[in-house]
Each structure stands twice: as C-alpha cells, then as structure tokens.
Amino acid sequence: MKKGIAFVLAAVMCLGFVGCGKEITAETVFDALSKKGKLVFEIKYDSMVSDNSAQEPNVEMIVFRLPKEQRPTPGEDACYIEVYPSREALERSAEQYKQIKKIDWLYASKNVLLRIDGNVPFDIVQPYTDALKKLTNEEVQARHRAEPIIRSSNREKTFQLPGNFGANEAFEILKQEIGGLEFASYVYTANAEIVSFWLRESGNIFCGSVLVFESYKEAVSFAEIGYSPNPWAGIACSIFVSDNVVIEIDRSSEALFVQYSNALKKITGKPIDMEFSKRSE
Image 1: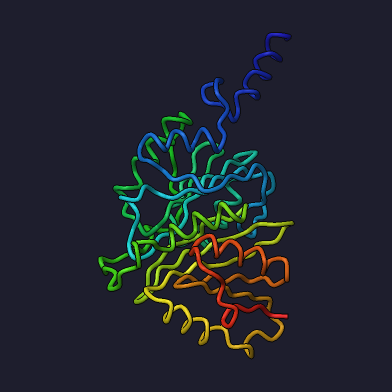
Image 2: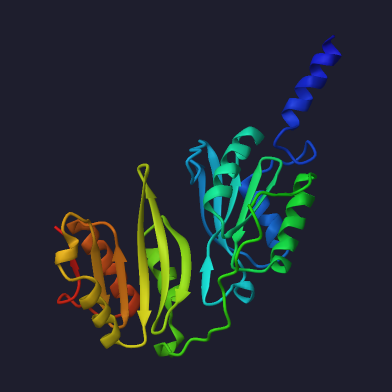
C-alpha cells in the first residue's frame, strides 16, 4: 500500500518536469529554443493572466523576437512562450487563441504554449517546435486554426534613416530609460520605421509607439496631422517629438510627460520640440 502511494506521489511530482528532472519553465523553454537560433529576449512575466478571454491565471510568459536574419519584412510581430499551471488551463487558453490569433503559429506540448509570428514560413518555425518536443518529451500539437496567412512581402524601404538609426535602436534606448516596456511589433511604412509596445501595469495594458522618420520635417508633419487637439477629447494621449523621432503613448500625466521627454532626449541627443510635443488634459 505504501509503495502504491509513493508511486502515485512520484508520478504527480513529475508533472511539469522534464523526465522527472529539470522543471519546465519559460526560461528552460527559451534556452532550448535558443539553441536553434539566436532568439532575442524581450521581457519575462512570472505570473500573469492569459491574453485572451479565458483569463487563465498564474501564467509564466517570456516575450521574444526571432533572430534578425529570420525576421519577416516589412512587418514583424512578437513571439511568446507561455507556461500554464496545468494542461487543462493551457487547453482553455489555446482554444481562445485559436479564435482570435489567426495570424500566429500556435503550438502546445505538455503545459507549454508556443506562439510564433505568423508572418514567417513554416520552415523557420519547425526547428523551434522540434526543440520544444525534445525538451518536453511529448509531441508538439498545432493549435492554430489553419496555416497563418503570411503578410510579409519583399517590399524594400524607399528611404534612408540618418546614421541607419531606426525604430529598433530607438526602442532599445527607450527600454533602458523606462522599465517594463514589452515589444509588440515592428513595421516600416513609406517614410518611417515603427516599433509598437505594451506596458502592463496594475492589471491594465497601455500601448505606445516609437516612430523614426527620414527627417525632422516628416516627424513634425506626422505630429501635426495625427495629433490636432480636437480628436483628443476624453482620450488620454501624449506625443513627444525630438529631431526625426516621435513617441506616442495612450496615457497622459505631467509625470509621464517629463519621464518620456527625458527618455526621448537620450534617444536623439537633442531637446524636445515643445511646439509639437503635447498631452491631453
């Protein structure tokens, strides 16, 4: 009887562990996937609620980007490793992602959910799913509804940024100055590079963007057209302009205005243009 109880306890304790050895965490998954490519770590959350209507609690998550040579153009989305407290919680969450994340590659193995940018082809994705299978010792099952529609193209940028300093470089400095920013996406348009980001704070999710234009004139033009005072009625918004770089966030306070202004000065090495930098009251 005692041997039977001991066996059951041992089996339970092995759940969530690799071969009854090392525990499966978001970090161990990231490390395993990184052996297939130089993934770029963005941010880690020890305990959060899943990003869907399932609202599964106690999810450990790492946000990462694919290696530069594997990133799609002209648009790139963040990738995610999510480790759930149970397989049942994962299944509930995966079902919701299946409905709303139709442009992501979505894979599950054990209690790990892997979401990879749907803009990249399967031949880039497969080595990472193979690495996940090797780590968990379980099959990796596709959870996306169908093969994602790849939105990328071979369209080249038609503009040259001064010093080849773009939105990715600007965002790296912004992250150092303002903690907790989470990469969401990168895209280039006809005249700018844009990195969009999230900030999770006190149960809320705020968003913002860093835009780098070819010239100061284009940055000011964007600020003038997109941020005239009238559309701001009842909406919390702030915009910051310095040289050819613009930051916009969906928040507004005097303290935030000072914080982001100082961060932008670090990015450009130039003063904030107070004529075009403003916030809603």
